[in-house]
Structure formats: structure tokens, C-alpha cells
Image (cartoon, rainbow, N blue to C red; front, side, top):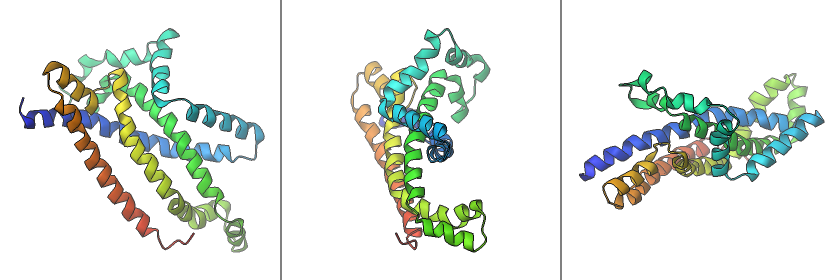
Length: 236
């Protein structure tokens, strides 16, 4: 295979990597915000259950969580992920991101990533929200603003500014963690490189994948860095 053929092969795998990355952010960020509100709830049972849930998820290695979500349903007699794996005939000729619907393993990995990262995001959100001085809430009440108006118009932008650096770290970690998906045969870029190494007896494509990650992480760093500068008028 030529260098170009191998690049195209790896790009097809990187499509799965990007899909996992984007979908995880789409679902994990709002879920993390909801979990953070539950974590800060004045209702003690809700607060306690959420705290234990976050502790458990953050304490379990992500790869183990992937295995648990993918294999436990089968051990309990459910075929929920196998159903997706047998839908190939309905997606014949389908290309692009929709093709990932064929893979029950992709769905299992996505669920694991969303649960895992929503808990990390929740703690970041909680730290950002609780860092806002109570006086700003009181000032908003004096001005006649409702609680929702105070949060959206006064607090939210300051929270975004404060949580952006730790969120950037988590997002970059997420990019690299997508490689764990190959543990259950999701055809992302690392698995594509491993297949090339075993079938074509060439190792260099495995190291070549680092270029894709470096370029993507570099672009994310630039974009998030610019976003942080735009919010620099908020003083800590």
C-alpha cells in the first residue's frame, strides 16, 4: 500500500474517533451540568446519591467501564448491543458518520464515555458555580432579577471563564481517550493502524496515527485558547 492509501485508511478510522469525540461532548456537557445541580441540591438524599455516583464513576478506570457496559447486558441475558451489530443489511451502501449506527460496540463506548466525562464535567461545573461570590447573587436580587436571570445574565459567563482551562484539559484528554474504543473492536484510528500492522506487516502506520492526534489537539488548543482570551475581560 502507498503512503496515500494508508493515510486514507487511517482517515476513515479517524472519522469514528471524531464521531465519538463530538457525540461525547454533545451529551456529556448538558448531563454534567444536570449532575452538578443535583450535587449542589439542598435535598440531602439527592445530594448524597449524586456524590456517591460521581465517586464510583471517577474511581472506575474508563476501560473497565467500557467493558462493564458492553459485556454486562449479555451476561444478564440482554442482546441490546448485538442487535445493532446485526443491522448491517439495513445500512448497505451507507457511508459517512451514519455507518457507525451499525456498531453496537460504538454505542456501548459512547455510553461509557458520556457517563464518565459527565461526572468529571459535573465537578468542574460545580467548582465554577460555587466560586462565584454570594454577593453577586444578592446584587441581582436587589435589582429585581429572578434566580434564572441571575444565573444566565450574571453568573454563567463568569463560570464559563473560570471553568474553561480545566475543561480544555478534559477535552484534550477525551481526544486521547478515544483510543480506548479499540478495546471492544470499534474501528477507530488505532484499530485501523493495528489491522494494517497485522495484515500488511508494517508497523509505521501505528506511529503515524500520532500525527492525526497532534494536529487535532493543536487545533483544539488554538480554538479554546482564543475562546479564553475573548472572556479575559472577566476578572477573577
